[in-house]
Length: 112
Image 1 (cartoon, one colour):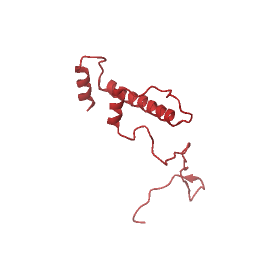
Image 2 (tube, rainbow, N blue to C red):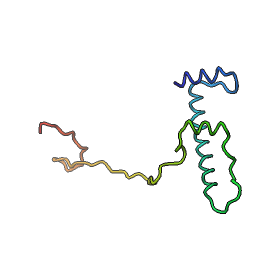
Image 3 (cartoon, one colour):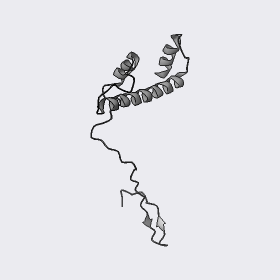
Image 4 (tube, rainbow, N blue to C red):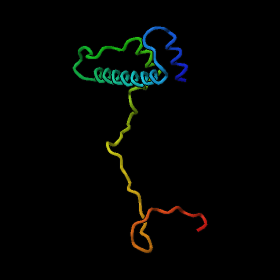
């Protein structure tokens, strides 16, 4: 898909010429930048005190990209929290029958 997209964009003859990986990276970077701008606009609109927004409004191109990405892009999931640190469970070990030293878990045999 990215090969087709890069051929189309490069054939326009305007602006940059990139390989498929370059256009893919550009899209990832553009989405991240757009997400930050949408979040800044939302924060500016939700603050108290009124007054003009301190962030430039979205351009027509940004609005078009936002419509492609979907209505909820950049807004996060409501009532969802992610812990700052994952809970890591240490692997369990078994004590060997002969020497008392910990042994790695053994695969279960269905015939036992």
